[in-house]
Length: 77
Image (cartoon, rainbow, N blue to C red; front, side, top):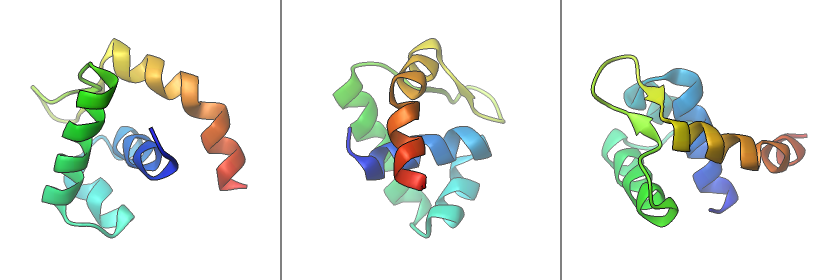
């Protein structure tokens, strides 16, 4: 997962809504949804539970974010 993809996951997790996250990221909602699908395919697991609103992280999503959190924090500085 590259920095841009990680930023997408973090923003969706923070917003708990793909449409709102897409606005914050300045990309279209379909582009973000497609990127998330590709990231989930790469990771091999669903990162978000989309069965209800607001979105929630799955166990795999939380684990993925924790693994990459220090990298993301360093890049934001």
